[in-house]
Image (cartoon, one colour):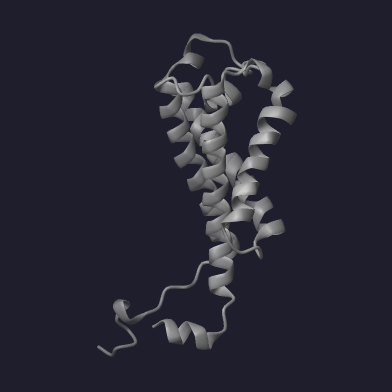
Length: 169
């Protein structure tokens, strides 16, 4: 058998930056949705993903349970694909943590201030306690940093000249 035919000697087809960005968005949504659910369970916050996506539209017995939380976290993962696409299209060239942090804070403002009337199960900004505000700002800040920095890093890593890639190895 020649070296070319062995599976271990074949190179993997590279995944496009856009596909990586979309995958990053889904993972970020699920990861930070789970962490937000844990924060809700331990009463660090008055709201969870289910408060936004499930309890605002369905007032059934199951909407307060674990099934609602899991469905809402998967929903946040799907919505995060769109968020990652927006970051990819608008801010992928920005380098560093600061743009990603500001992106996360901007998302928090959009969700808790602009979109709040859409979600009747979520108290208004003035009705939230300080623990909820601080916890959710931190979660959104980390969420934005996860998405933004991951996408920017992949973009800049992919677009580096071949000489600097060879120097790294």
